Image 1 (tube, helix red, strand yellow):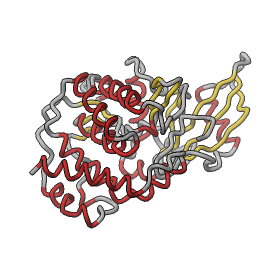
Image 2 (cartoon, one colour):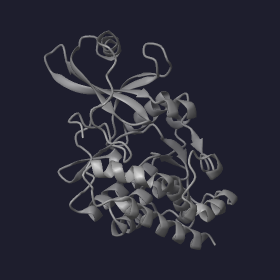
Image 3 (cartoon, helix red, strand yellow):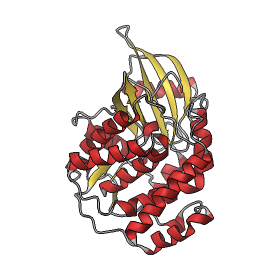
Length: 326
């Protein structure tokens, strides 16, 4: 993990030595937009995977103080799905500013191409770093549940969230996914493909969209921040819950996943009867990539997580979801 933090590692490609940052003249032009009196004293690329190209920028302020900011240029996949991705991420982070939830603060946003080849935003660095192997996984899961419950308690109908993408159902169906599930799961995919999103029994919520351990920061065993908000949307809160559950089932273990779910249910009071549908969707989206995830987690220091472990966790969740849906 880069010492600059907040370039959260993805389980298929952990953060490390990233791509070269924009040249010095462009970086200076970016910094002048939000800190005209600051001087750049260092910059390094951070590998954030497909979602964004990230650059850590060390600044010396006019008064002599130093700090670090992060330049996030929207990734091609995110731009293809949502040309307004940078603007929407900035809207969500601005809306979170008064919530008390630990999320980056936006210093600047360029919602369209111009100065740089891609839309970008500049955000603050949060205190903390990912911990992919916490000493108390159940406690970590409970803290994550508390964060997600607080996020989903935000009024998604607020005016400042009006432009955030709405996702009343799944963003896409299995037929449109880039890779199909392993042969053993094709029956489950057919079941999901034929299904319809269940009736929404809970209020729409502001979703993180990719809530898993790699996007959570910790400081002295306490959750100190959540990063990577480019997939944020308004939709069924169980979609967020299921994404976290599937990752947690093999990252933190079954006990932690169940504790996470129980704490979330207690804090929100939400109806979880439709959770099997969302579990099935989340597990099937992951299933083709088990080998990549295993390689990524091994690079993150979790040699205990191999492809077989991930496939077994997927199979159990898929079997349980299919039984519930049947």
